[in-house]
Length: 75
Image 1 (cartoon, rainbow, N blue to C red):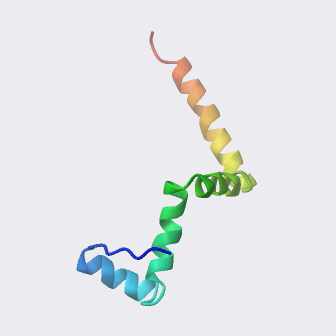
Image 2: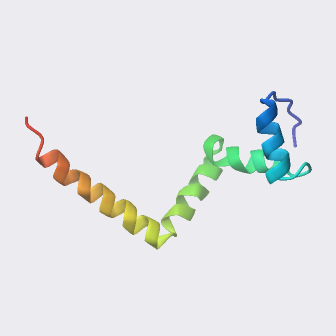
């Protein structure tokens, strides 16, 4: 584990402290950043998303809808 000092606006800190809790901010920020900065975290996030069948169906329907929009574009 590494220790990091960061600067944030006072209202952001107050919000983190009230919603997350004063002793949970580090873990919250760590968990929030992990999928964006580690390969393993990114792969896990993709696997989690793929496991959500309703979300995947919605994403597929949305992307299929885009094909129709492109087909109608003038060339």
